[in-house]
Image (tube, rainbow, N blue to C red; front, top):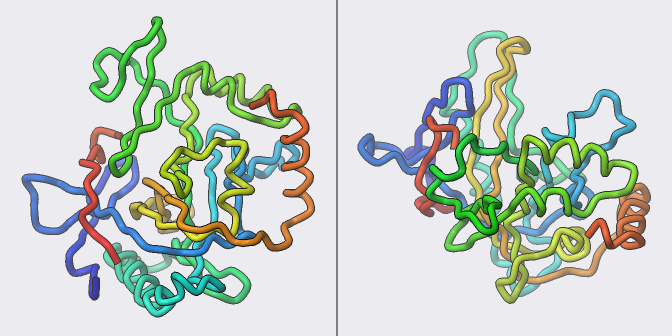
Length: 287
């Protein structure tokens, strides 16, 4: 869609994030869901079950703040979807225009959701690994109770994924960071990646890396804005709704540290709405 920014505005979430929404309908606030076909960059892929969490990095984020991330590139090799290459510059332009809807004040800096990978522009896609426990699951219309255990349903675009405390503690993790998962399970539920294979079946966490890295996908996501007052920094990030595999490419070389983590995980398979921004999950915008 040309000039997508003219159809959108940001819904101000107070202490939470600001969300891009469809413009001009104050009675029915509708989140703007963006979609496109991309190739996942294997070098910028951090969607293994532990994301980019490294317990040895004292300056890194806490495990509860972990996000699964990857970079979305224009089509590089695939001939079937090569025609989407011509759309990619317009997609980048649309996102930059949406980000400009939040004007910078003097002295403020901007961290865009548009990054660079191997000299090429890319979209930095992210998915929060954890969601906090609800205070009263019985009041949640998107949850049911089974054997005394609340099962939470996460609605994507016509799909459902459910999680529970047991699913959180059973999340596949390397042995040396199992303890942080146990602590996280006391206050949070794991939020599985809303990713589906070419047959429409949910992709298991142990298969995230080998199936998704370098894959051709159709992805749906939203655009969020945060302002860090102390740093005077305006930050834009994406929030994944759903990704569906269209084709898997031959994997290129990966970082040796990533390969070591994947090998360790395979050797141990037994580890196998803030109110202000609670918006309808309806696809209303596209590139």
